[in-house]
Image (tube, rainbow, N blue to C red; front, side, top):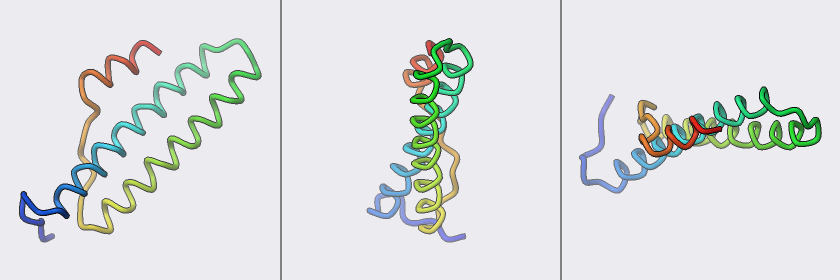
Length: 87
């Protein structure tokens, strides 16, 4: 697979899409844990909608990333991982 030059606009977009899909997937996991811990059925329903939306965002970002020749590999930042760990 050809990689775009590091300073190219394409490489920048690929990097942003990779970071975005990783963050959305971290959100999916965090909201999933919240759903399990939540005792309010109405809130759980809303959280399921949020989780589905985040999952779709991650899938769309990954699809676009791959269409540009990228491969998902990013991990959420330590700060985001810590925040998601609180949920």
